[in-house]
Image 1 (tube, rainbow, N blue to C red):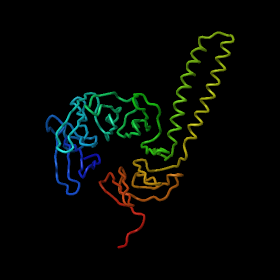
Image 2 (image 1 turned 90 degrees about the vertical axis):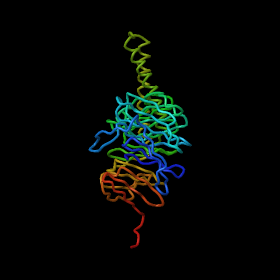
Image 3 (image 1 turned 180 degrees about the vertical axis):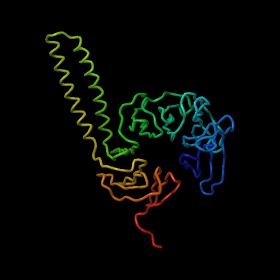
Length: 334
C-alpha cells in the first residue's frame, strides 16, 4: 500500500500494489469487499517486491456511492480508470488508456476526475463514464490539488507547480515549489529551500495581464520589423516602450504578491492547522506561523517525513522508515 487510505461513511478504502481495491470496516478492520481491477491476477517483480502487472497507485476517491481509482503503471499493458460501487465493490465502468500511466492521488470535481500520471502530464476524464476530456500541458508530477475546478500539479523535473484553469489545457502560471496549500486569502508554497505566502488571486490577475501585454509586445515587434522610417514607425516604437514599462510594473507587482518568504530545510511535506504551518523534511519536522513565517519550533524525526496529519492537538508524522511519531504541545506525565 503506497498511498494513504480514504475514510468515508465508517469505511476505509485503500488500493494496493497487488492490483486490488479494498474496503474495510473502519472500527474493526473487517474486510467488506476486495476487487481486482486488472483483467487477471498476474504478478511481476517490482522494486524488490512481487506486484501486480496493474498496481493501484492513485489512492481511492469516494463520492456518494462510488469509489474512483486507477490501476496500471505500464501503458502498453493498459491502464484502467475505474468506478466501483462503494457499497458492494462491483465495478460500474472502466476506461482503458494505453499512452499514460496512473500514479499519484486522484482528484475529483463535480463532473470530472483528474488522474496524475507520474512524470507525465495529468489526464482529465468525465466522472460519469471515464471518457477522456484532455491531457493537461506542463511538466507532470505525482502531486496535484484542486481549487474550485482549477488544477495545480507538479513538481515534475523542474521543481515547479503548474496552474491550469478550468476547461483549459495550457498552463496559466507556474510557481516554484513542491507543494501548495490553498486558503481563501492566501496560498502557501513549499520549495526545496523556502516557504512563502502568496496572494494567489492578485498574482493570477497579474499573470493574465502579463500574458496580454506580452502578446501585444510581440505584435508590435512584428510590425516594427516590417515598418519603414516615418511617423508610423515612431508611433510603434512609442507603443512598444509603453508596453515594456507596463510589463516591468506588472512583474514588480507579482513580486509584491508575496506576503513573506523564509528559508526552510523541510521540503517534503506540509500541512496547515489553524495559523500554524507544519513542514516535514529529512529527519526533522518544524512549525511556522502562517501570518509571518516565523519559526515556532523544530524537532527531530526518524526518517524522511513524507506524511503529516493534525488531530486533537497532536501532530502525526510518517516517515520513509515506516515510523509514525506523535508530537504534542506539552510533555506528558509518566
